[in-house]
Amino acid sequence: MHALVLIIVALLVFVLAYRFYGAFIAAKVLALDPNRPVPSEQHYDGRDYVPTNRWILFGHHFAAIAGAGPLIGPVLAAQFGYLPGFLWILIGAVVAGAVHDMVVLFASVRHGGQSLAEIARKQVSPVSYWLVLLAVLFLILIVLAGASISVVNALYQSPWGTFTVAMTIPIALFIGVYLRWLRPGKVAEATVLGVLMIILAVILGPVIQHSSLAPYFTLDKQTLSLLIPAYGFLAATLPVWLLLVPRDYLSTYMKIGVMVLLAAGVILVNPVLKMPAVTQFVAGGGPVIPGKVWPFMFITIACGALSGFHALVSSGTTPKMLKNERDILPIGYGAMLAEGFVAIMALIAATVLPTADYFAINTPPQIFAKLGMQLQDLPYLSQLVGENLAGRPGGAVSLAVGMADIFSRIGGLRHLMSYWYHFAIMFEALFILTLIDAGTRVGRYLVQELGGAIYPPLRNYGWWPGVILTSGIFTLAWGYLLYTGTISTIWPLFGVSNQLLGGMALAIVTTMLLRSGKARYIWVTVIPMAFLLVTTAAAGYQNIVNNYLPKQNYLLAVLSGIMLVMVGLIVIDSVRVWINLARSRKEQA
Image (cartoon, rainbow, N blue to C red; front, side, top):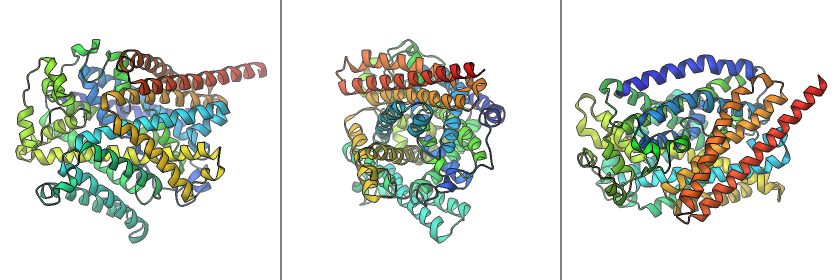
């Protein structure tokens, strides 16, 4: 199978879905009103509630939702072959993920930009409010730890990559100041300047690698596991316009640009997918992801098809910055389709590698030795890159190698393989770090809500002592999981928690649709909700019984069990409300 076929099919499906299904939801299911006041105007405070240009907000939203999931998940799920993942991304993004993101964003906007927990309080019950708060906190902790592990595995002992990624932080700060005070409103100018500075950081990487500064950027896993949470703390406390928005905005267009470039590379090179359409691991026993293709592929490819984490962004930072309700369609539905395309490109980049090389990168050496596979191009690719590529699990390295391999085949650019590889690593880290800054900020909001029940001033987002305290508590919690976890233990837990939260969010917004008199349209949310909950509950149970308990990972087993119970209670509570609403309407009729 040639990769070009997958790209053409995906583009056609996504364009048609946006034009027809997205427009149907906007006009009929949600009835968006461009004349209705939005939270950014009603509650403007210059810090969190700030009316923002549609395309800048699209950039922030896409960067915040498109974290590790669309890059790492498809790469890890490639062990099942390219076809299962491709079909799930294609179908899931259109009828599940984009619907989920759009409807939750709409619900939050109509509730004054409040969180999913507050929406649950008003639409379902106070009990669901507390359950949602706890479930969301669990999820964000696990998401941030799992995503950060991929960055650590990609950057350790890599001064070039570490320098390039580190430089994106002061660049984002400069662009924030540039747009706020130096050249307000000059978005295009700031974009060009910021992207050029990021590219310069990549070019300077080898200079740093061979200079006296190299030891300062040659870091071990433990040090990186401390520095990444420190960055999350910084991003959660600073004003959104200073670091979070400019970084997300710049990284979004860098991400989209790289994906377009990768798509162009695939068109020009038209590589053959070397991974089989379906591998023997669909029946279980895979070295990367444990379990069978169902249900484990559906929790592994999380953000590329549907992600509960998106509900936190759609009811967190984005609704507080939305300038007009009509922007819900391109930002809510459109950004998710863009993420689905990113996931497909990641799947292609991983599956153009020889099968043995893919498994050599994504499994520890002792496990790969038991597979009985012979390496093909990996020693040569390691030589071109200048780093040992084997035994770097987590998906980030195999994706970067696949992308660099495609780029370097264009026009005889093989000698630039090292540049392409480190550029791809920087590109991936940008994805993941934007997830970290938005996720930590949303987590801070939730800790403030929980703490506010005990000490009310904590709910004041402008009170600096509360902001610093809650940011510190939350960062320490997910930083501990990062420091002590591995990709094989954290990612399955992330997948289960993430998809459970997606099902839970769909149950809550279905309740809102019913209360709004939209009962005839609830199939839009109920069908993906039912599939998600059944699939994810099966995966969660199998994870606990077959993975965590036999390996004595009792903490992860308990976390999984608690998440399953909480989400089950929220869904039951929502169904109770649905039944009561149906009875009430029947009596009125």
